[in-house]
Length: 175
Image (cartoon, rainbow, N blue to C red; front, side, top):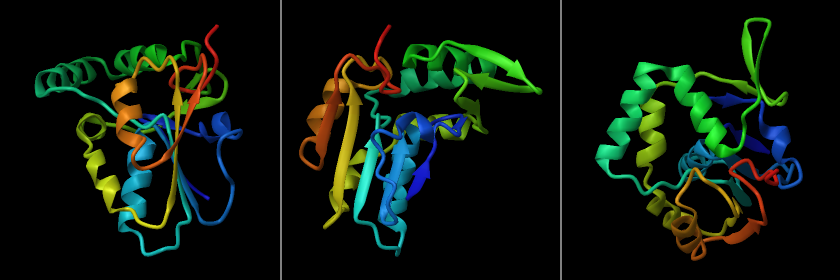
């Protein structure tokens, strides 16, 4: 399986082990990583039987909202990421060996303004180019990050959708 990480994250794959299919010809991605997974499938010559999109970063932002997010990110990247992840359902942080660890299972990865812009402006319509590949989409019922209803309505034409009840962006049950 090939897996793509979420925005500014690394090593979060284990959070989704109950949803991921660990087989050779499966490509998966979480949030921003779902966008990268779709791009990979569209541009790779390698065999892919299944594409799994976990909480795909599906936004309905105009340019003004995107610009406000970019400005906040430039002003204080760590605060922006912390607030973004808190809204997504992760709010436990600690510093360990000079590295931020989030919720004991997540680590911050490298990210920049270009990544953030791509996150908000991705063209999901390219999914229509996929033929003969099974697509699964996993959505949290209480995801506060993405445009959930619009994502559901969009992906239902291309994929099997699994709506995880009482779950946030990380597909974890709300407290």
